Structures are given as structure tokens and as C-alpha cells.
Length: 225
Image (cartoon, rainbow, N blue to C red; front, side, top):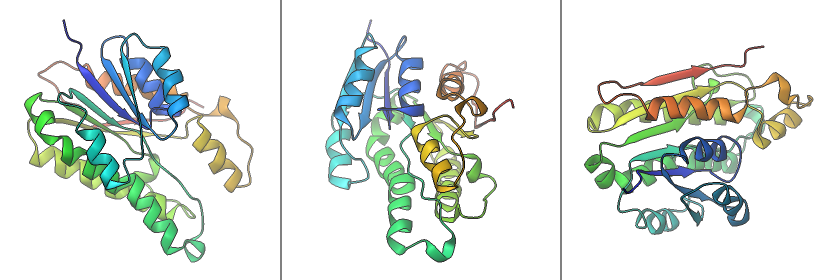
């Protein structure tokens, strides 16, 4: 029997890679990211996986990749960028890059896949952030992008009733992005104080495996510290 297909962006590391492992026992995992070697390493751990290297923030690449997936049962958007700066130091280029990766790429790639998502009553899971609920100083561009992603999910959920749309709001998670964030904040990276990527992936799996009679619009997950 053909496995259901889970397409996961940002799958080369962190939450995306953990999500691929969490879904890989039950789904064919189609892994998208910019680092082909890292994607290959994750795929090698899974019983049924495909590797698709490319940056879906580039519209032409997004279209080429989307065409590879005639069937999608689960779409997980995990790719993202964060630049931590005061508003006075946040350039137009930084705003543009943040919005392009964190919002526009999500919206366009989902739009391209809508026919198969509708046909298969797919799950769409968007990895957001605590900053998508409460914005903090020096997180202006990132928080704005995550508030926009929250609004996008709310509209998608309303406009596309055939889909189950879940937003996951993790707290600080022990990823390479978090390492960079802590460096920008001038603080130590203490992974034992943060969520494990696997814990966030478990939340994704909970949403995806909920009974057909249930939908989980939002999941908030925080470190138990």
C-alpha cells in the first residue's frame, strides 16, 4: 500500500529534520531544503524518503519543486530565518529577506500545491514561534513575519475547509538557529534549557494523526524549565 506523502520544508536540520523522523515511520517523507548533503543524511535514516534541494523562497524554484509532488497528504512548513536587531538597525534588505522566507515562500508554495492538498484533505502545519503571539524588543522583523504567518494560517483555515491547518508555536528550541539567536543576544547557548526539536516534532505528529473528526488549530509548546 502506498504511504501517505509528507512534504517538509527546512528538513535539513532542527525542527524540520526532527519532523521528518517523526513522520518517517508512517509517511513517505519528501525533504526540502538548501543543503543537499544534510537532506541526504536525514533521508538515509528513513525507510522511504526523497531529497529535493532548493530554496522555495525563489518563486521559480518553488514552482519546479511543487510540480514534483502529484500527491501531498501532509505539508509542514519549517523553514525560517531570524535576524535579531533593534528596529533602528533593521535594514530594508533584512525586512525583505525575513518576509520572503518566513511568509511569502510559505504562501506561494502552499498555493502551488493547493489542488493536491484539497484533493487529499491534507494537513498543513506551520511552525510559528512564541514571537508570533507576543513580540519582544529587537525581534521586530521576525515577530512581524510570524504574526503575518499566524494571520495567513487563520485565513487559509477559513478559505480552504478541505484542509486541516495547524499552527505550532514553540518556545525556544535547541537548534542551530537558536544558537545564532543567543549569539546575537550576547548570551550563552544552553540547549538543556530549551525544547528539543523532537518535542516540537511530536506536536506536529499529534496534529497530523488526530482522528478525522478532529482538527487542532493551534498548539503552544514551551520548555518545562
